[in-house]
Length: 381
Length: 152
Ligand SMILES: [Zn+2]
View 1 (tube, rainbow over the protein chains, first blue to last red):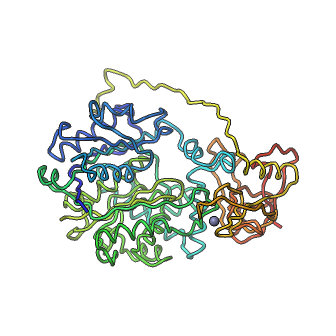
View 2: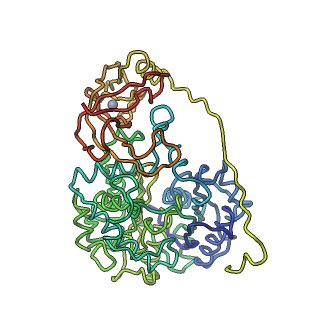
View 3: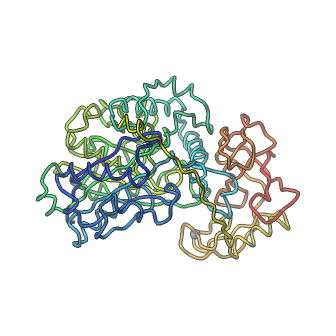
């Protein structure tokens, strides 16, 4: 396969409410930072992929509204509706198509400007489901219960994830929440949808992120510290919750298997140095570490309890604090990619894991309760 | 950045998007919903390839990418696969919290139905419990013609 690399990353701080910027304006500082980071100008960008969701933006054909702040004028631009990791997949494909040497990928949302339950409720089928009032939190609670029952996962094991990630976020200057939470703090937080308590759930944040992807030729010319794309794949499960066994994650397993095969990874636990996974809820980090093959099925709780996924563990997961500390919807998966790039470069500051990072994993999710998964393997060379 | 608001105050434009829709249920869901309304019965549809009984019924099997075949009667009783107690009022709920959502596998179906539980203390609900549909007095051909499921 032709090679491509991520040559620039930029993001805004995630926040509960950005008043200084309206929602398209929020994208601009992320794009400027990504270009600066790559050491290029907007003139070096051959095409642009924006990632957004019209409901979150409150505007249809939202990509048109963020064109100006993404340098789209007079350029080829397309939009991916969903999570930023999927937008980046399309951006990479365009670089590999031979038509474009570089793609700028953006992802953003301002959750503060709407009501998340209204928006996620509209994701459900209007004939069979929507009038029940289900939203992302209640649907994921159904998944959490099913998964925890199947594998005897305790609420404490989920709380370990939340405490770890919130404490990791203390070292992340871009994080929305900086909370020094203990397992007891998480366990003592208010029940939202059993078994999910307040601190088992990610916040809804404002934030934007941008990355520059380049094909090999252009990446060599740009220089800097490219993070090479070693393997990437995504896979989707069924739409209706009742069509899925919510304790299972076959779509993630399939996506991971393909990404690992492309990257030549046979033992992910040993060969992946750090993973940034889509922990929209604490239990999801447990499920996804299983689905990614970092431990055996049902072993996510024990893996977290052992400390292995801590910043100094043998397979650090979410040293940035993950979504539990910052969740700009749509941007979250692309932020995982940016964080993985930082780790590979050794530029993650207080988040940097305690080993030489040669291979990093980034993971994005689209749809309700992990319906669709996108797995990225990035490497130093 | 911090003193931006010394010379100008933040303006917020409050609005909402309100778009009327009229979603056609289609032939398959229409038959299912009318049977709920008129006969208080659940119908599933069987996939000719994987033999799964899909309930609620779909025109196309989500597993096999083939058109589903025969209509199959499904029981109004089944088992709770998973559940949650919704405790925070989101403003779009059909009941006042706390109340219980569940995925219920009806006898004779191979897929689950997301619905509401009633006539039980939220704290007493467990996966594996058997439940039965309670139909609304006034039925209009909607999924909420089933008011909730109650313990058997
Ligand atoms: Zn089938």
